[in-house]
Image 1: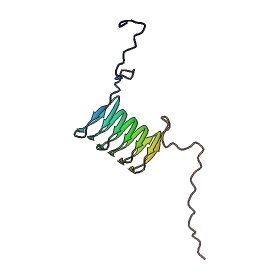
Image 2: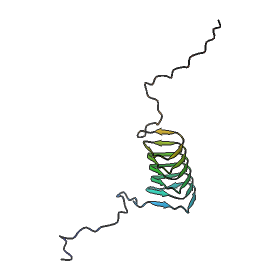
Image 3: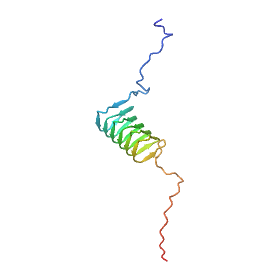
Image 4: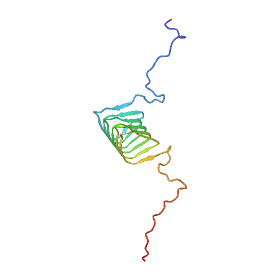
Length: 151
């Protein structure tokens, strides 16, 4: 009855590994923390504090209380706080509470109503150059030359 292998269900184990050896528990930098220098994570990183330096992660969430002064790069980036720097990411979301100054290089970009953004946006399709000119692009039309004839 109690030890029968035929009716025993598999043990429920906490999901702490993604199968590739990486933790699925996010790293958190709380609102009362200030870091100076480069921050790197091979998993998910939640920033709620202040970071002065570049941030690199697989998945990055910049919380509402976060202030980041530096460039960020991640596969997915969600900005809810303040960022003064550039973003490079496959999927980028600026939420309604986001305040960002800098450029965004992305494949998928979502700007929620209320997000404040000052910078340039460049689409990057799977590693192709973001602003490559089409091969058969027509040259820009030249402005007409002013008339020099006098009557």
